[in-house]
Length: 87
Image (cartoon, rainbow, N blue to C red; front, side):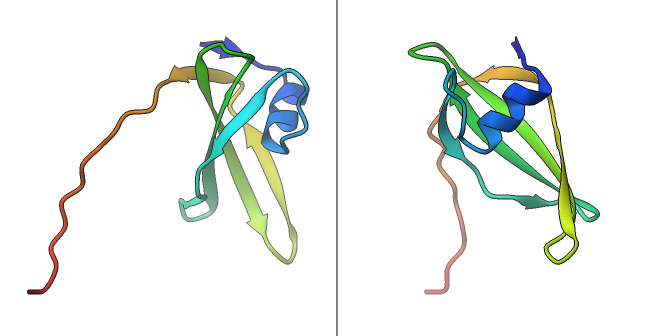
């Protein structure tokens, strides 16, 4: 786990950090009144971490962002998904 400051989290989210590199930004997940986004980042060749960003508001009125400052170490895993298709 890594502890970030608000300023560090905001720079990672906007991909303006000199210290951390954004590896992947996942899609926004709608949770009703708010949306959640995961940003995968790392420092140098170190481990990967996940920054969780919460968003409230609207496209027209603007958004408010809140960051989870305690970021857990993550690793990429391959998953297999089964689905049903017409024959």
